Image (cartoon, rainbow, N blue to C red; front, side, top):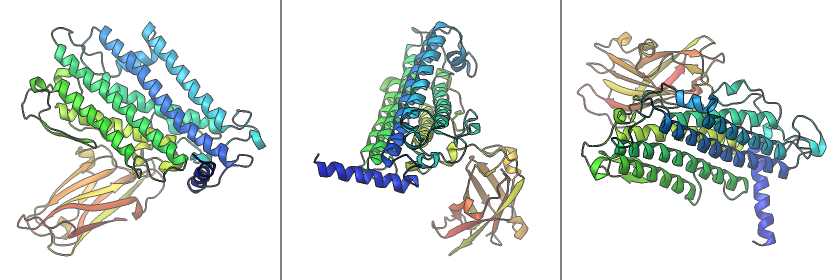
Length: 477
């Protein structure tokens, strides 16, 4: 690389810091030091994820081999690794403690001035300003383990925030793929054990591979090599590598769990390609392995996890969410902050608010619709989830009030979006669909906090209405 090229790359990187991080630095902190601080947070978070995940994985596998009980109980293995007094548990806790110390020391060294001490100093000893490194909100923005109760006043507190959040993501991911597995007989259940190992080990490989690729992608952006939102990059290599890891995960699972043909019963689609099924009903299922059904996913609970394909999807999607949250927290100025799924959920302490959903059509009038109402889960909440009675109690059919005949209204809540299927014996008589009563977290939401989409519509004869013909709107009353 020529001297000119090095200077140009550095200039691009500094420009990215100015554009993405607000002001270039706090008084006494130059842009180069600010950039190094952010790069360190991203790099060390990835190291911590890898270190804790591998340590905890080793402990869980050791306990499963030594454990003589088929069902140790929910959370028992994870709890033993994190708080137990056995030799295995003690070594695990010591290793995790060392990983935490390394994470905090690295962040304090690169983000807290020349004296490497957070919370004091001016000039060359000044800390990087929290707003400039994406943590200017005053409290840890992440959900899990009450991390959002951690106050942020200096980069040392940021290290505490990252440690807290990442531990919750890693703990939940490892517990998901190991905690409930049956302690099978090595000889009699050899094939089931191979399937268990393929699911758990490859789930962890996928987790670490995706986190690593995202960390490399963010670092490349810090260096000014691209300006994209990871994993999307101009050359497509980050997404391609993550897709390959996902495909390898699926292929390994189907090979180990797919019966004599070593193929899953149904096709599996991944971002790296498809795995073709064999249509034979000889795969293992949740009951054979000890996998909990429905899937206790980290962010979307209650989905089915019975077949191998469903178990794979459960593990993949849960880990995908955990990695997305951890990665975004490690580079908040580039990621644009955390997605709603990563933020503390609304607990409904501020009262209630009604949201009215209406439709309009540029063609046929519908007699059946499926509407997706997306909402900000940090501002509003619906008690319960899926199709529980508490969800149905919050959705009022407005078609009947307009003169509808026999109206069916079926709501299904997915924590950040509500799906409402409605139908009538005749074309809807007015423009009203339904009203939802949300709990609020104090701040009053506005129309901009809700997005309404008609995903399906049909007329009174049952014929499908072309997509885009029927639209909807959401209004806060």
